[in-house]
Amino acid sequence: MKKAFLVMAIIGVLMSCNNDDSVSINEQNFLIFGHFYGMCVGEGCVETFMLTDKKLFEDTIDDYSGQDLNFVELENEKFKIVKDLAKFFPKQLLNDNEDIFGCPDCAEGGGLFIQYSDNGTVKSWRIDQNKENVPDYLHNFIDKVNEKIAFLNN
Image (cartoon, rainbow, N blue to C red; front, side, top):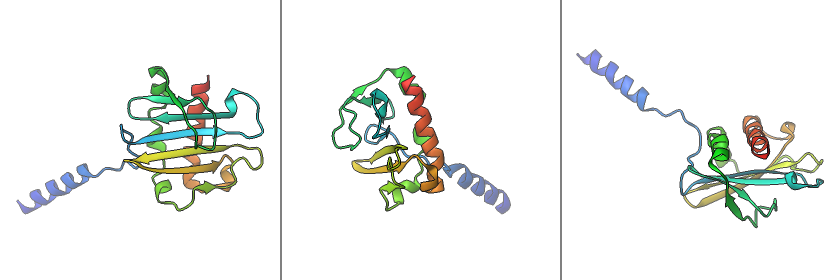
């Protein structure tokens, strides 16, 4: 009987464990993601989006400083394309003391602008597009952000 109880307790603990390392996106939490290219001409040079659990928005100002953002809601079809992006956000980024990784856009290679709000606490990062200049834990996320922006721009 003790063995059965122990087995059931272990199964219960294992089932309650959550291996989801993604950030929480909801009405209070959002993820802003975008790319910027300084030596560039055209609409696609600066693209910034805000993702919540129910909607996707695009910035209309195209200022990659992140200071002046004006978001308009995009259609639900575009939201469906990017709604899983939070699953790829590396939680390790939230604990990192750096807010600039590599040298974003220094060699005209562009950069990523990332901002995450967790219940009103907002953190922002600028990330070099050249993965040789950033920690390995960011590589997959960089790829996913670029992939989602490419889908949204088509």
